[in-house]
Length: 205
Image (spheres, one colour):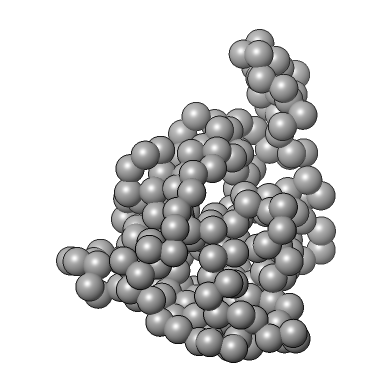
């Protein structure tokens, strides 16, 4: 019996529906740490802000307190990493991306968002994947506690329907754009969209 088949059988034995697991994935109870660059450490949140700009009617720069004042909500979701692990029923709190949309009013031609993070990291998403029925948060808490530095403190993106590299850590900017611009990993071999149910891991997938 192969590794993935064995892992799916373990799910059934634990009473977990294996259909929750995308193809080529295995479930873990751990939360592996993967990122590019050093972990940023903020002595205080006065050092952090979030710039929202590009194709918007009202560009803005928010402090942490101003971001959280937009209102927070809690979600429980499964997450899936391109390195093949999945973690079920993870609990997050943060500001819904829709609150940002309401605040800045994207122009009619805004179709994409480039997420800018520390160390020059970026990733790109269609705006429609951050709205509507999709879960999309600027997450500040995980499992009832503030994010740890290695998991993106003070704010990371959460977009659980895509591979988890799209949920960028240490977010500092949201750039609304009329055109798509591949981010850091997308320029270095990862799929431009990253749907785990279609195994869109790399350029050729």
